[in-house]
Image (cartoon, rainbow, N blue to C red; front, side, top):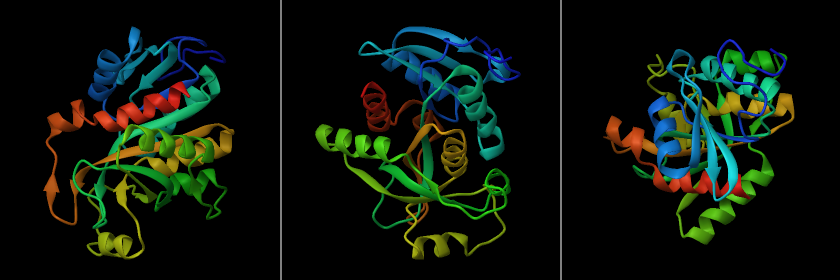
Length: 238
C-alpha cells in the first residue's frame, strides 16, 4: 500500500496529479472533470467516491470527491498525501453564509477555520491550535480572482461536526465573531495539511444564505459554482 492502491482509493503512485481539487459530492467531481479538464481518466470509483485525473491548460490536475464531514474527508486527504504524493489540496465546496457581507452564490476563500471537531483536537494532540490556509495558495487565489474580475470574500469560517446541531444560538454567536460561513470539512483539511507538511486552501460557494433564509437547489450545487472552479484551476496551474 506504500504507493497505492489503498482501502479507499484505486490506482498507484502517479495516477493522481500533485494538485487535487476536493469537492464533497462525486457528481461535482465528475462535472469538473468532464467540463474543465482535458485527457481525463477515471482513477477511483470505490464506494462511489469518484476521482479523475486530467489536464488544465497542459497542467496535470486531479479531482477527488471526499464525502461530508471531517472523519470521511480525512480518510481521502490522508491517503492522497501519504500514498499518492499529493502536495497541494484545494477544496471546492459549499457553505452556509453567516454574514451580511455575503449572499447566495458568493465565493469565499477561507483564511482560517474554527471548529468543534473532536477529530481535529486529536490530530493536534489535544491542543487548541489554529487551522490556517497556506499563505502562498491564499495569495494566489486573491490575485487570480482580482485578475479575473471575480468578487471573492476572504475570511474565517467555522467547521461543524453536526449539520443538525442542538445549539440554536450557534449561528448568531458565529456571526457576531466575524465568521463568514459554516461548513463541515475545512478545519480538517487545514489541520492535516499542517501535520503532513503540504499546502491546502479551501474555496466555498454560499449555497445557503442563513441570514436571509435563501437556499440553492441541489442541481445547482452539483453542476454550477463556475467562478470557484475557475479560481481553483488557475491556482493549480500556477
